[in-house]
Image (cartoon, rainbow, N blue to C red; front, side, top):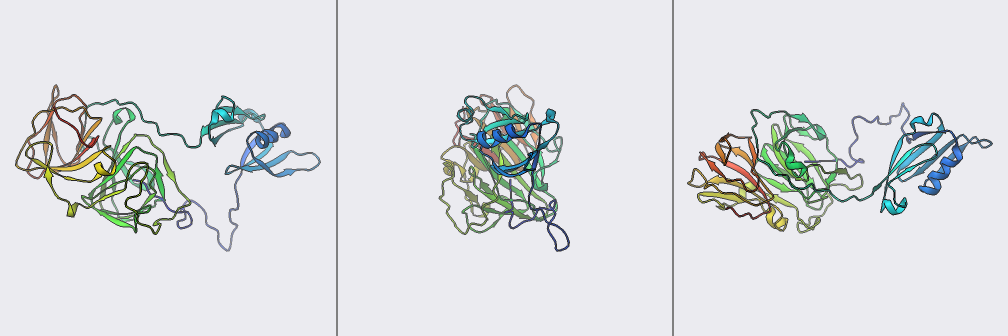
Length: 382
């Protein structure tokens, strides 16, 4: 769940604003020490494409100011034993640096060359049985934009999946900014309260109520604007470690509404619980409402809310899917897995069942509702 402000619209509380009685910030420089100015200037200008903005004194230059690639460097006399490091983004780093990804300037500055558009890294599958109980795993930490996060998939399946239970106790404006994620899959389900969001090319800001859900396709720009008291959402993503990048150029809303826009093979989804219909689930005696994510991801993932429809248990079965996750939204149930103790679950508890493990839901209360997420969308039970 990531938000952002267009910098023209929102001032960071940590940045001093200019006023009529004081100076305003007009620039910033990274200071790098040098012992010999000329060879270092030549390295940055001829090798890395910086330009000289200032150099002095004219008769015996000792200080130079260079700019390029979003940086301003100030080269001045100093101890080069600690000359710092720069990360330089470029296309095809190995070709640029003739087979290496690290260069050293004459003053000792380490220059790390990295891919300007590095591909998303998807860790290999490392499935395991995970049961996380709210009562015993209530370690809430403060994350981005001041929101509180609880890890609901400890171990993160080897880094392939992340699950977060996110809450905001006191409602009001959320200090977010326009941002996007480099992900394979990401969804947000509103469990309690409400939250106001805005997404790129998806019309005006809207309110997500309890039971509603959105699919955030890869790199769609979005921002969290406001929430009510007691907001709780469940966010699932793949891979677990992925980049969240601010976009300082785009303003949201964009003034366009294109629900069929393709974002790296996926479409945005906004699911309204109040108008959803129920249909038979994969287990006899249960039903589900489909969030619509399977169609929007072309079968990559399926997301449903499941409830009993006359049954109190499922038949023992196993699967061969990449991921099977459950979050108890309300009611109670037990999870029985072959070779393990029975897990009695209540609202806020979560589970991940790995491939090949026979399992069953038992002792399901009549008011049970479970958020059921699988990759791929359709799975077969054996």
